[in-house]
Structures are given as structure tokens and as C-alpha cells.
Length: 248
Image 1 (tube, rainbow, N blue to C red):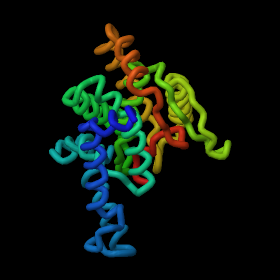
Image 2: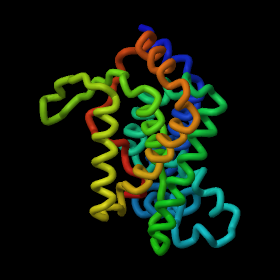
Image 3: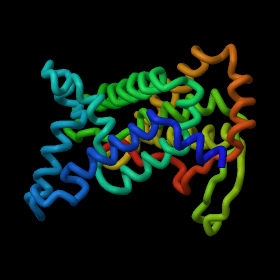
Image 4: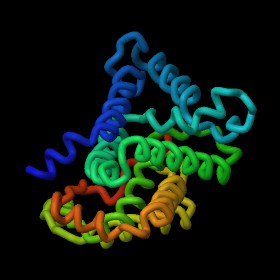
């Protein structure tokens, strides 16, 4: 009950989730708006939409205002239903506790000012790419990194498909370090491309962890004790990562 109430009153987290869902529902990727047409017309509308609001590496440094702001707008754009649901679930699970610990205004600043650089880093490495980068995974990865530092002893209930969705409980640091290792190995193998931008995950996670360490290293124990007293269980999804930042 305490966990449910805690998440319920995490207002910034709810606003971010609501904004992502609303923007997706109104856009062409959701398939809910008939004004975008069907078939080839819908595909053309989706392509134009992602190019307009996403980060397109080879035009990012063109000097156009829209391109300069695209690392922020892209955080609220998702490519499909799975992309959206994967991201908002991770944000719901881990964002509430991080928001409570940081405060509402610092949390929204943290979310935006870590998510945008994660996008920029990916774009800089893939500067010649014309593939639009969209999604909140860079910012959500930062939330995971901050969560790891702030609440390493929180218990995480994980569901594993290959074990018939058997729920197993682990300390947060085990789950999140494992998650980060997967992202790091994938990025090192050069798997970035349509579907998943692992480098954005790695950069976002690192930024979130470093920020939490720099800002809260003097009082982490107090926050961790509060987490144990108020909310011992955090549910994570079956997938080991949030859905990738990119247009599939």
C-alpha cells in the first residue's frame, strides 16, 4: 500500500508519463488519428514526424532552432506502442522514488538535463546518420543510474520470461549493474542502429549516477533508510532494458 501511495503522489513522474502518452496518442505512430491516413500516406506522415521532432544527427548542427531543441523534443516522441510502454513502465517503476528523493523541480531538471546530453552524445558519434533518434530511454537510463546510487539496497522484483515469468527478488544494485553491463557490451559491439541506441543508454546511466553521487553522496544512507522504511519492493519488467531510443 505504501508503495502504491508513494507512486501516486509522484507528480512530476506522472506528468512525464502523461505527456509521453498524450503526445504519442496524438501523433501518427499510434495509429489512432485517422487524419494521417493509412498505408503509404501514414508511413510518410510518420517519417516526417520523426524527422521534425527527433534528433537527426546529420542535421543537428545545422544551426536551425528546431534542430537545436530536438534533443529535448525527442524525449517525448516514441516510435511505436512497445517503445512507449517499455519506457513509461521503467519511468513509473524507478521515477517515483528518485523524484521523492530529489524533489519535484530538481527531478524534472535532472530528467531533461541528462536525457538531452545522452541524445547529443549518440548523435555526435553517429554524426553522418540520417536516422532520427526518438524516445525517453536516455533520460530514463539516467533515472536508473541515479536510483542505483541513491537506493542500492532497495529490493527489486524481476520477472524472467525464460523462467516462466517466475518473480525473483534482488537488491537494486545487482539488477541495475547487470542492466548497465548489457548496454555497455551491446554498445561496444557496435549494435547501435535502427531500434536501439545503446550508447544513449550508457551515457544517460553514467550521467545519472555521477549526478547522484555528486549531489547526494553526503546523505545517501539516510535516503536508503527512508526507502526501506517506506517501500521495500520495486517491480521491474521482464525485459532487461527500456526500449531503445531510435526509429525502428
